[in-house]
Image (cartoon, rainbow over all chains, first blue to last red; front, side, top):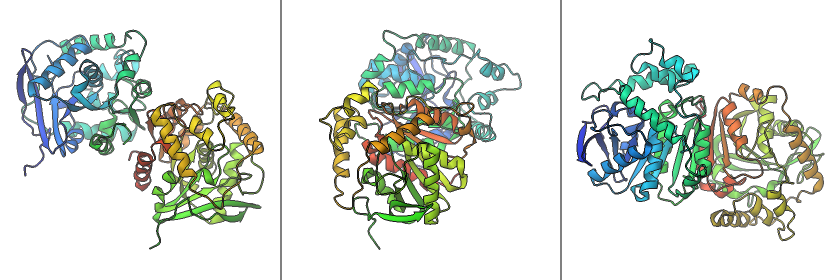
Length: 291
Length: 291
């Protein structure tokens, strides 16, 4: 039996589909449906913490994915969530995957919500972490003083800024942030290029478009019957927790789990708890999201 | 080895303390700390669903308790939560229990929050279901049309009204309500007298007093470091879920779990899921509430 691979060592692969070349990593084993990871603002394949990918790769294949224009995927970064959802579906089509589970984190959660509306059969169960519905409020306003002070501080180089914006300022929060950065830094080769201002600009445009309701606010959520697990930190400054409340109140089949003393990176702060709950949720084949 | 007892069969016992005779039931086995159940508005020992008591009695003693003036406990029902917390602490003192875990449901959650402020050492871990902090809003306003229509309907006799006010109106919600009533009805002997208007009136007065903040709203929650699990249904009409949000945002060490298509009786609607999470939470001895 092959030892379960890890995002620290899994090779980057490429699939041609939709006129693009999409970069991805796939590893794991077991009989569960593949689990697609959809990444946050400016994140690449290298931003996936092995502590939230590797434990779930015991039981299923985990698939990490660079959307168009990010990392080593070709094409332009779409300026809408709908555009990103189209690429993600084309990518799965290219791999021959008809149905999978998904962890959508932040921007990636919005992409998952759009995918499930565009093609409901593409997803079975959704885990939505630190994200927001269309029409959500206060989504990724990096100009807010609470975020700008960290983003504009020249002392915060590379991953260091993530320690400030993904984690709370408590001793426990900052210690968890340091552990997170250490885990990300374990991967040394076959790295993606970091995202630049072009990626950031297009993704910010997509956030602004997503903040605008279409018709009755949140009405589209009520049509999504897929079992969903919504996760957030109660002190998320990037996409505040009230957006997770609106998701779990309006999605008809969603369990909400929030973590204390945690911000946008709640799953990286409590990876053992998060992956334990995620595994139990994904293992269930019940109609209800309750697990 | 004795088979784990059940609230369907456990005998009612009495302890003399604080000049009162307190009625209780105690059953279970295992090495865990005793788990005290604090009951909802007008509820007696007979309102504890065996599906949420019995599974947790495998691993620890479960203790169900009639507060003063309720069921077969002597004394007057206090018109404040603080008065009820005083009786609950006196009851534990009478049993010689210095520290225990607690499930506080609705009114009982408020009592638990007051107990932990009055004597922090009396509780180790708290599970707060369908409840509200001091200064919470829309607590048990039975005059609201959404509740009054069920409470004033003469067709809703005995437990039937609980099916309407604890569960959602969906087919799944009402089916869960029927199963809940069937489980409550399994106990045939050694029953408590149902609560009358005197109990209800005093408890409503206590809710009104609890709705009034003392000083800065929610400030007292920030001093409670006890690991806490907050649970609610997203469609709770009796104590709406925003009260659970305020708890998990202001208690420094609280995980929140909400259930879809569920009202005030979320734990009775999903007893398997609830007791599984509660058992995992109670089993942990970590400083953090994350489990």
